Image (cartoon, rainbow, N blue to C red; front, side):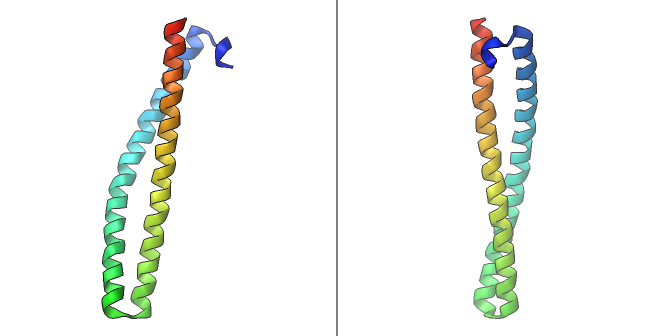
Length: 99
């Protein structure tokens, strides 16, 4: 598909990929900040659960832990998306310089 792309098409695709990268990197930064907060909350909840040994504290810990884990998975997906976009951008730049 990319072999048949014109220079203008490659440039348009590069602009699109660049915007997607910018957005994904911004999302990753926000996600990392949120993850730091949630991981801290999960650690605090774990300590409260250990100290209090109550079912409510254990439930709060599990809930906080699950939330942090979901956010870690989201971060992992963002990192994979960024890696894919970086690779696509590199390929497009190679094609642009080769033409």
